[in-house]
Image 1 (spheres, protein in one colour):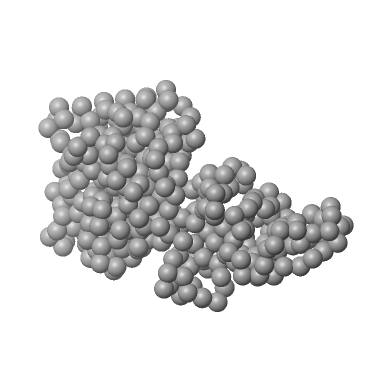
Image 2 (tube, rainbow, N blue to C red; image 1 turned 45 degrees about the vertical axis):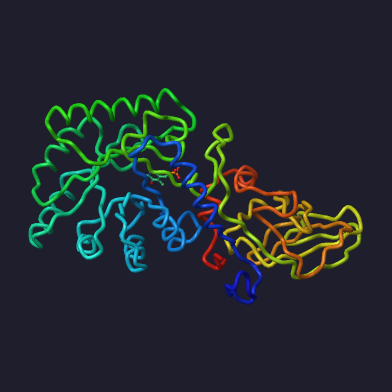
Length: 372
Ligand SMILES: *Cc1c(COP(=O)(O)O)cnc(C)c1O
């Protein structure tokens, strides 16, 4: 099957990625920043399920300053695709895995003396410098040097001649819920920066804000921000809606339609019994594609511009929909995420029904679904 000249294979199920909307979101977000503030976009986890390479290439065309990944492997994939902008590994690496940082020119995060010394030693052997960003834990409780010990660590790393401290950063634990705690985190981070500048240690890039930080905490911008979710047009919080356009749509086509009498059990366990004579449409997508199984009997889909509900348990490769007496036919396009006619289904809506966050919905979409 061909969509926009892209072959999607013989199963009519695909995710449509609108890179113009991605660009719109990037520019919309850039408008909200003070001039000169840099943007690192997080493209980890296959660009939140949107496709690492095409998304990153479009961001480079938009003049993104940095790309953020979770692992060396994601960084290598970007470099092999010809991407030249600076790349920061936001997670930690093991001492045995330092060499690719040189070959692929990747900046990495550090938060202790051990890894920093190992990096410095390898860099000295190669007569090169490595760029590091020091991660400070101001309350997230994940990776990061505790803010109590951060000043000492930065000074130590500053003395390692083959490391260049390119950045200093922290991450918010509660930006969506607890303003007081977030202000406390910003405060701790500011104290550290002031202390360092008294020692004449000036770090080029200082960053803290994820999507919520960027939208809701102006004082968290420093000189670089690190949005992910909002770049993909998804809102971290209902009250923080700005003019974003969703980038991903999830679509399939009706593969089978069958008339059934009242009292028919549908799918495993017969969790759904038809209350009247009706038609059941089957869709070629399932939890094997990362569509959450706990949306069984809950989630809507759009067919012919109208909303219908999934009925019965979601299977690995198939989903059933009770379409009543609507004139639904095999081959009709079905929207699981996105718009059709005047109706739309958002990632945020599915996340709420699935009792999770929008991040997990888009990241969960499997590699079996082609991104077009
Ligand atoms: C993923 C990530 C972000 C982006 O978070 P969003 O909520 O998607 O904006 C920012 N910083 C770090 C360290 C991350 O891991």
